[in-house]
Image (cartoon, rainbow, N blue to C red; front, side, top):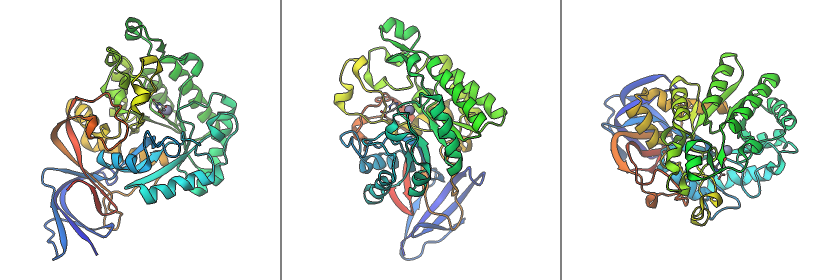
Amino acid sequence: MPQLLLKNCQIVDPAAKKEYFSDILIIENKIRTIARDLQPGPDTKVIDLQGKIVAPGFIDIHVHLREPGDEDKETIATGTMAAARGGFTSVVAMPNTKPAIDNEAAVEYIKCKALSDGIIEVLPCAAITKGRKGEEISEYGILKKAGAVALSDDGDPVANPEVMRRAMEYSLLVNLPIISHCEDKNLAGGGAMHEGYYSTILGLKGIPCLAEDVQVARDIALAEYTGAKLHIAHISTAGSVELVRTAKKKGIRVTAEAAPHHFALTDAEVVGYNTNTKVNPPLRSEEHVKAIIEAILDGTIDAIASDHAPHTVENKNVEYDYASFGISGIETSVAAALDVLYHQKKMPLIDLISRYTTGPASVLGLDYQGLEPGRTANLTILDLEQIKRVDVNSFASKGKNNPFHGREFKGWPVMTIYQGKVVVGN
Ligand code: DOR
Ligand code: ZN
């Protein structure tokens, strides 16, 4: 049986709420022993991780793998390779594929493809409504049985509050969270960027923060009324953050995720019309970015999620108004977080790691496996001191649409171990 001995690990485990130094022995796909000064057997592969951080495997709760239907943008093979390079051992695949993941066969297709082509775990998210049209809710019992871990019409909001009410009521019967893409399309009004100073000087139609705030307020009201488990996707405004903070205090079952581009970039990046800055919700102004960072630090925001949205060059190499929304961000998520939140904002490392592990796991209600003997050996290894410039040309993702290209980050994921195998690293 293959044996892997990780020496001199600095373990940071939010599941066990522990930080300590140890060696880790992995046999086959499981952690066998965590103890100091373990000695290798004759066939043991030894990796010295002196100076590195070893954490339980990271989860990205919001990823667009584009398969089926848009394999020119990404596939399960390339998307999971990109995720592993980004330090992830699990991703939640969003259902805005072609066709949408709204039935049993579609969920099974994702699971089968993930097993044959993927190099890490893919957890399918199924559509709230049939065809993601926002009209008729999907069959949640069947979807859950097939393996769906959450429900979302992401990419589009569920505009009709009566449909969302029913969705929430039925989600309770199967105990699945509703992941809401909070956007009032009328208020968003076909805008291309955040409405404010920069949209005015650039002459681009703005998307006001209100478009998000009113939908977050509505969904929190619906969650309070129905008792459903609501998760706000890619939260981006000071107003929404305050709504979530207050709702949590009231005991409403609401959680939230934020994307790295919403805490590491502002709408000033749009100057120059680089279409890789075009994303929905849009990059916001400084006061919103500040509020997002505060909410990540204080736990109002439970998870950091990339909203990895790969697009082709043809989708992006056009006038700003015509470019697709989205950032291919899974390979820069952890580096952006380590640079901005850990190094610059001094966020405690165990808290930061929890936003990638216990945070998303509790949103999904997963029995999350920390680093304990007997657990599956899924591990993310970080080098907090590594300084590297983002280069989209080195991405495993087919999507090269990333606005961090050329930016230097301090702190990178350097190795990913999935089910006892080193899938990325040496
Ligand atoms: O920018 C975005 N791109 N936001 C979304 O909600 C959907 C995503 C996509 O699928 O491209
Ligand atoms: Zn979305």
